[in-house]
Image (cartoon, rainbow, N blue to C red; front, side, top):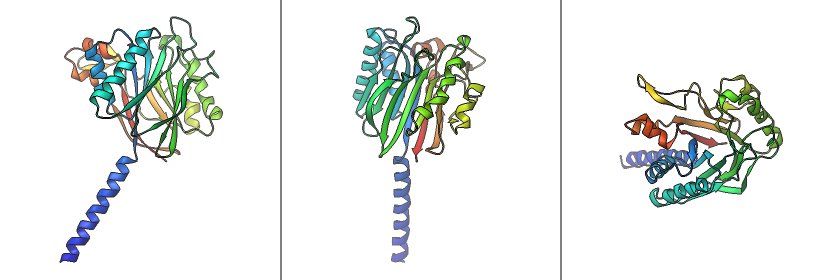
Length: 275
C-alpha cells in the first residue's frame, strides 16, 4: 500500500511538472490599435489600458501620434505597467513613419522582461517605405533561446485600398529568410481578402477568422463590433497556436462612447508555443 501511495504521488508530481513546464513554455502576444495615442488619453484611460496589457508578454501598439504627447503617453503606460502589474516592463517607440504628414504615425512595443528579451533595436522597415504609407515597425524578441520577429502594420483606411500596400508583405519572408515572422496589426481588411493569399500560400495562417475588431459608433441590438480589420499571422512550421482570444474590453463600460475614448478597436491576444 505505501508503495502504491508513493507511486500515485510521484505520478501526480510528474504530471504537474509537465503541465507547469508546458504553460511556462508559451509566450503571449497582443496587438492593439489604440486610437490616437497622445493627449486624448486620460489617466483613467492609461490605467485601464495598462490593466488590459498586463495579460500579455508582448504588445504591438498602432496609431501613436507623432507629436511629443504620443511618446509621453506610451511612457505613462509603461510607468503604470511597472507600478501595477507586479512585473518589470520595457518599451520601444518608433520614429514617425515616412508618410504624408497627415498620415504619419508612430508605433510602439512593450514587453515583460521576465519572459522575453529584445534582440537588437526595433526599426521601421525601409525596403517598401515608398510603397507602404506607414511602413511596418519590426522587432525581434528572444524567448527561451528562440526568436520571433514581429512586423506591426497600420494599413491605409479601407476606402484608400489598403490591399495596394499589404501586397508587399508577401516579400518579407524572402527579405528575412532566417526570421520567424509574425505579421500583425490593423490591416483595415479581413483576412479573407485575396491580398493575403500569397502569404497563406507560403504557409502563414491568420490567428482569427470572421472576427470583427473595430467598434461601432453605436451598438445595434447588442452588436458593438463593425469590421474584421485586425489580425495576427503566424507560420505553423515555426509556431504552435495555443489560443486566440479577442478582448471585448468595451463590455467594461456603460456606454460605447466611453469605451471609444480608450480605443475604437479591440485588442487581440494569442498564445504561441515557439517550435
